[in-house]
Image (cartoon, rainbow, N blue to C red):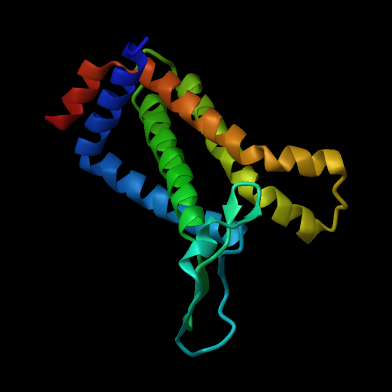
Length: 191
């Protein structure tokens, strides 16, 4: 039962030791985190040219503003962006972004170097599907607003379950591809 967890952790640790994979993971994680924060509107375009910071009661960070979304405790205005600092949203976005990055790096490894994994290139590419679903989890409501589509109650209910579903799919995909990774051959990239 725990073999799948051990194998997944070992594969991730080996990937983190390889510089090109570590660099790709960091870049994907940061880009996705920024996109996630824009999608949930915690990061927006600037409203002015001055620097300003406004702080609120830290207890507000636990107040929910939506399903799995929480209130901000600070507003940071810069000439480049306005950031609603919501620590729990930031942690959730970082976790999702890290899962997306790990899935993309591991899927890219499976697709680019099929000799490393016991899966073919197509199977590795299937690991990208949860990453795309995770993107839709935060962007779907914004897309509906932009397109002007009136969402029904059933659609709104479905959208609130997209983030948990994306998390389950991302974790499942990561474990699934890691189980099919030949760890010994992957370690050859370290040499």
